[in-house]
Length: 294
Image 1 (cartoon, one colour):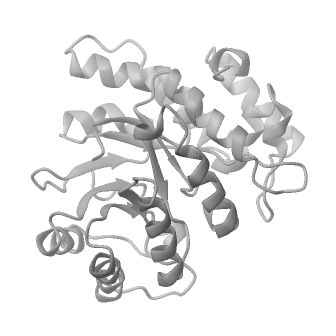
Image 2 (cartoon, helix red, strand yellow):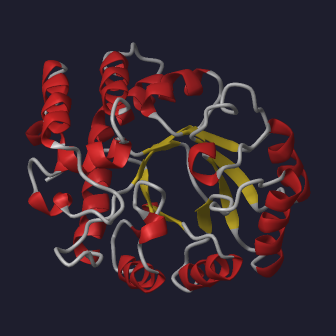
């Protein structure tokens, strides 16, 4: 079961031939956890999940079983096909994983509340032991969860629908369901969310703000004064000025060139934008060598 805390939507690292570098991808997630994160989600949107092959996903899943951080790892499915979702879920479960971040299928426009409900209901019918964190990200899926849609799913599947990653930010301030975990998709909203009863955050940029974001969480839990929240917000807002995956990989590639590899149609930032990003972050005293897990 997922705990309250700060999680990374972890990155996928590629070889020069665009295949998934499984060892490096796992090491990256492990290092972020060592830097303070509660856990890491593989194959969310930040992990280029729609672009990574199912066979490569399965190879990584099997390899994570040997990690000492296995109990801190979670998986998105990142596929549209119902059958592929079930295939990946069942494969993960062979290695003891039960909690999944699942977005409604993208591509086709016009997703309805009933259609999305039926999608999750079918997964639960076929894999009743699953625990699902809903992924609310209209920009990618074309569907925006309403409070009523979430409440209806939780009402009918209280043991399976256990939480939500809210990257559209229309739910985390108002949706209140007992024992339901709400994670805004940005550390810039972490403290506000905690004050409203949220459980933490699941974020792309915690790949690099890991220790700072965790300090915000820990200080809130301990009722201590906040000393780094403003910096966390400023760093996140700086990254948000650029395409997020492109900016994150461009930042990480300063210290390690393997992060330059990215799956088309995604690209790195152009040189001008990269320099702008790095200069803005430098003004915030947030530079690669100080903020990348070794």
